[in-house]
Amino acid sequence: MKKILRLISTSVFIIFFTVGCSSKKNEKPKVDDKPPVELYSDAQQALESANYEKATEILEALDSRYPFGPHSDQVQVDLIYAYYKRDETALALANIDRFMRLNPAHPDLDYLYYLRGLTHMATDQQFFQNMFGIDRYNRDPSHSLQAFKDFKHLIKFYPKSQYAVDAQLRMVFIKDRLARYEIAIGKWYIKREAYVAAINRSKLVLNNYPDTESVEDALIIMITAYDELGLVEPKENALAVLKLNYPKSRVVKRSERWTFFDW
Image 1 (cartoon, helix red, strand yellow):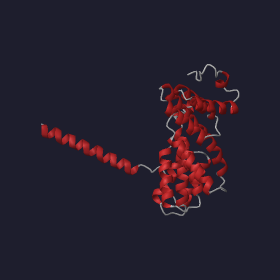
Image 2 (tube, rainbow, N blue to C red):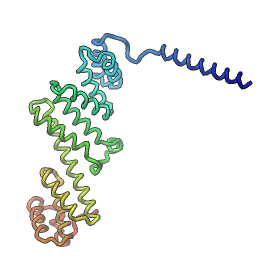
Image 3 (cartoon, rainbow, N blue to C red):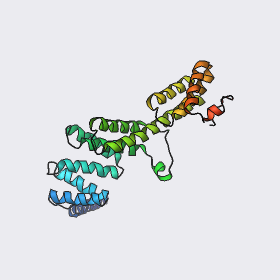
């Protein structure tokens, strides 16, 4: 009886396996088997209509079927752009790095540096921030730092690029984000009475981001820390700079009380 049941089970497995294989063979591929020129034209139409999912499917098929086709380089660049637009930032970054490594003298490198900067900026955003408008400036800034480096490289080595002006504007935004991150850390140190560390964070803002709105907060942190450490002269110097540049600062108005933060 056991042998009969075993034979029945084996037969059923073989039937299902055979049906599964035959159904897979009969399935149509997502992308039609067309000449590469026609497929590339379809991909361009999909990109122009913002159908990035379809564009990705066609470009991936082109890249795998015709790796040395007539549009092979452009296919890879367009595929990176499609990944970026679909928020598949890990794939976009991996493909950018691979393309740059294999094509160090490609004429579109300025665009790729620009696109890598955009992708790092997109990676830095979080779902709930985009959805609910929450500004999480105190999160890890590593992707913003890398985006800043990409835009800086673009401006330095490709100053006449059509993407240089926009890259410059984005660098201003990133500098403000990085400065606010340092301020958040400085405030965290103040709360934990790590005053020397707070001063160092403030100096970093003053030295690296002197043209951002965070300078006032950096000076306030310095004054607070110097006051707590009993360092009168550095505190007075920082307060003088604050009064000169921010005469309406809340610290200047309340300097007699030496209470700087309403946290």
